[in-house]
Image 1 (cartoon, helix red, strand yellow):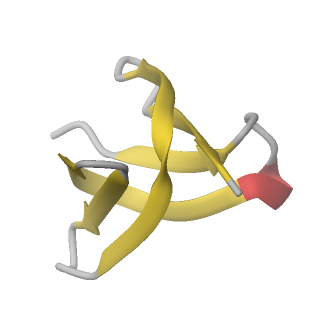
Image 2 (image 1 turned 135 degrees about the horizontal axis):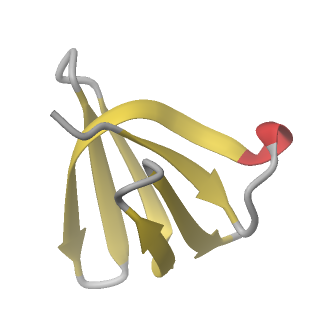
Length: 62
C-alpha cells in the first residue's frame, strides 16, 4: 500500500498538512485527503506535484 504525506506549498516538515494519506479527492477547488484511519482533511487549493513513489504530495494553499 502506498501512503503519502501532504505538504503545503513546499516539502518541509513545518508544512505538513497530514500524513498516511490513502485517498485524495478533488471537488472543485477543494481537496479532501483521507488517511488510513478514515480521518479527513479538507483544504481549498490545487495540486502542484504528486510523487507517489516517494509518498509526497505538494499542494498550493493559503
